[in-house]
Picture 1 (tube, rainbow, N blue to C red):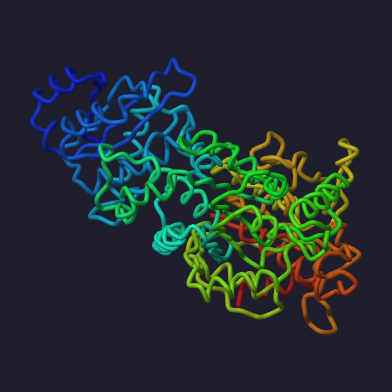
Picture 2 (picture 1 turned 30 degrees about the vertical axis):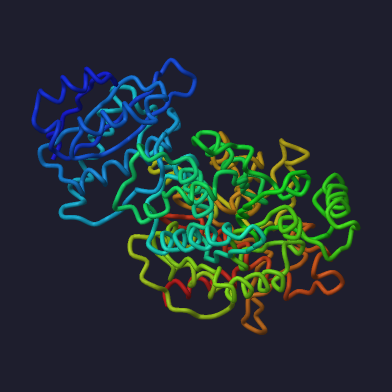
Length: 579
């Protein structure tokens, strides 16, 4: 299946005309092509396409918007066994790989990417890697496929082939938003709810890129007719979106910095569009649309992580509402600064008392449902074992006794020795990359102030917490460190080695899993503050700790390794894995 050729020609009309006369397949055969920008520029552009009439499509590009992008050369992938379905699939793969590689500014829209089934798809896809390597040999890729697919640029890229429920959600969101924008007096709140790994972050990033593409679309650009979003690329929608100001709010610093890098590399998006809740609250300009990832991590008027943030919270409240009333939350800032909002939520990922209260989240969900602006994601994209694994983890943490679902090739292992799990994670990182140790916040962070000290000492192993809060997973020392919840929430790993600390244990008297307040070392995580002020009990603490481990145990795409400090809880989990 590797009988392909890559033909190269200048991006000029005379060259295309000459090339078209050389072979009938140049005017009537399904091909995939890549148009490369001037590599002497600091950020060269690149466009990937597929067509059954290459010469005609090249002439369209030469007379359309692509002529203004300093594009220099064309490479056409020709294989006499390729059909239209194969070319659509190869186009989607190349778009995703180029986006994740980061060498070029990808000039494509993100509306037409597919993941459709077709005859002999697995066999054809093996040949895609040969095409990749041929293009890499010509200098178009700077990294290997595993390196690309393990990168944040790839995982957080707006160039994704959506799952069915993601595609339906995007379509319904677009219809609702465009309807709301037609009424200048309308204000709306849309809610997307989904478990870990269902792609809530991707929904936000994909939608912002799609809205920008619709806004800037020109008739001569052409649109993939099979795209489920093609109906939105019409003049009236362009007019509605012409002056659209939008922002993406992400509460967690590490994830926010990673998304900023993606936006910096994506035409029509900009890193300045990705903001913290404080940055949005301090903004003096209104926004038409604000998307909020991890909405459950927005804060209340409670004791913040620093004196500076406490001061900012007070000042923003006073600027927006006239007083520093404790009832105002960061969600209220977003409502005050925006006309339309898209909230992406999972209430079971709240991990601190000053996160938004369950009551506040429930009210937003209920209102969105009543106004037909509520969308649910169910397809598990991260964990290869599927949604049943996620529910199994949550049920075990709730002290239930669920049956172990069919995990397929997913590797779920319980370790009795931390050193063995640490070595297993090292081996997996050497094999497939992106394998890390993570843990609940059950040890003091001594190394923050004393870098030579160790934080976690178990079974003769000495470990430190993550040495950076920014992009820790990809930092140089991350394989030898342990990531905390505040560093890994929102990220994917290939394998996660989860240390369940003494903050979670089994009560022998009741047979239920309980929280150990003394062993839980996140001071902000058990502070009498927020919606739990003066009422923060052990059941509330258990909810947060259970949520933390629910997040950590669903980071691994290919597998999860588990070490449990409490012997009785370890025995309970061992029984659950054989039930």
